[in-house]
Length: 237
Image (spheres, helix red, strand yellow):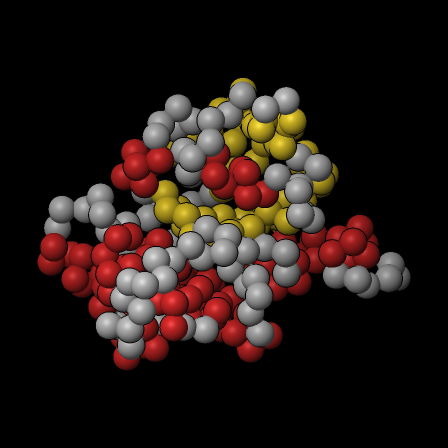
């Protein structure tokens, strides 16, 4: 579904992404792991059309998208729930969800999808007219994911969905990600909670300073001593 090939992204003279390549197959969960500054968020922002690459290519369902503006990328079927959630704090839950559907012209379908989000996250439906800024971090994360779903994406990109959340809420968000995959949504997941991410992932890529250090299935990376020592704090056997 998604192919990133030899992608180079720079901020001025500083290369943040140094020629990485990876693929996301339809129906998969693929995770990008790495420490802060590894290039994970920059990669997602480039796929979303918010940043232009220096070189390399990004193809979605066989079509090059690396020169498209962000709103065209959304219309093709890619949506991102950004790091830090980036909600409109003074606007209601429902208005935030409506903004996620801004490219759509099917009011009945939008209404049906809002109801689906409320089914997925009942607390949002119960408090639909309350301002987003009044919600807990976990509830705001639910809203950020719901907003991304409102564009009916075929590829959903999640950037650090468990950041700042309690262990209980982290488990809730990870269960939701598994549920979304079960309904056919393809997911590209950036996550510092390596244990939770790899437990879900079909495929994983570990980035180090803008490059792919190693890649394998989620299960294989979870058992890899390099990953266990660096990201899970577990000593090698």
